[in-house]
Amino acid sequence: MYDAVVVGSGPNGLAAAVALARMRYSVLVVEAAETIGGGTRSAELTLPGFVHDICSAVHPMGAASPFFKSLPLAEHGLEWVHPEIPLAHPLENGLAAVLERDLEATADKLGPDSSAYRRLIGPLVSGSSGLFDDLLGPLRFPNHPLLSMRFGLNAIRSAKGLARAWFRAEPARAIIAGLAAHAVLPLDQSPGAAIALMLGIAGHAVGWPFPRGGSQKIADALASCLRSSSGVIETRRRITSIDELPPSRVVLLDVTPRQIISMAGHRLPSRYCRSLSRYRYGPGVFKVDWALSGPIPWRAPACRRAGTVHIGGTLEEVTSTERAVWRGEHPERPFVLLAQPSLFDSSRAPAGKHTAWGYCHVPHGSLIDMTGRIEAQVERFAPGFRDLIMARHVMNTAQMERHNPNYIGGDIGGGVVDWWQLFSRPVLRPSPYATPNPRLFICSSSTPPGGGVHGMCGYFAAVAAMRQLRR
Image (tube, rainbow, N blue to C red; front, side):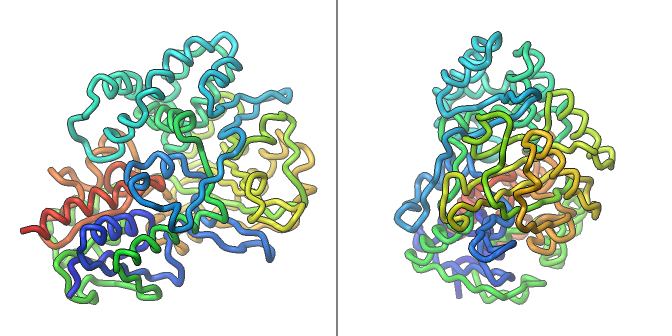
């Protein structure tokens, strides 16, 4: 009999297992796929020797994660690679807005908005460690109330409202637009500003790094850490009902509400299951991986030194395209999130060759092929890009969900992150990780603090499970 069984080996499932195993509880992780990792897996998707990240690629919140920082992940093979510039956002005429690690260097390039950027971001970056501790988790009284209040006064805005309130020129506004688009919310809807601020603060405080060798290295390091504490992992074992699991004192599910009902609904009160059934999933993504014969020929020189490139033009343009997705439309000029890890990690491609990773948002469950529109957006700011394409691999929302069943309808964030679901996910309860069944806990990104590779959902679920194990 195990103390705990964890279903799912995504970063949250592995984080939960590691947290329990390090407290000397016996833990088994059960994974349906051949490879562990969930959203942190890598593979040669296009051509031999070209290593692509199947889902997540860039990890600011992984570098900021209080739980990951507490683990000796470097000793287990995880090495963060920091691009020269974390983020660039190309604009017309060969210009680009740039978020550099150094806050002063970033502000200096923002012209009339330099002082405003320092006033908005500077104090939050100075207190970033405490801020991440307070905000990356469930709703609770902060240990740094004044700092959290300063953050909150701006976080309650929409991203568009924040950008317009603080900045006059397009470069600074574009940076906010690109950061906020990661939330997969309309930019004129709150709390998009909260996500934009968190990612911007992380860019200065810890960077936007890649794992050397691919995102799989995050999962591998967590798995190695787990095994060093006597944890066990079984792959190729699909669980359709929790009754199929070996005996244990608690079960933690790294799955979303829809799968919880399917797997464990018969062990939960019907009222709780009805609440889970009302959980809302957001838009999906259409993703393309490229094998390239050379680096992307960006017009803006800064983009050639950036790990991540936000492609979408001005604040107004990004606002329009992201709102269109929520209306069920497929924009002709989608906002594209693009990563180019091989510029900084030679292990990703053969000598002289490169990889690139990009996706855009699409309506929930969309099957429309967005390859042409995504590539046209890249070509818009990097003429000659198409000529470099040696091979490509595409995934629509259905293929994303087949790869990772947690990506319902292509939603990679585990559910909508509006104000209600940001803190009540998946159901409003004193502990969002605990269910009415005292043996059953939820540790997926459908719990606070939500999507992203940080392991904090798993960590807090493990803390909740340990209270039960101590009884």
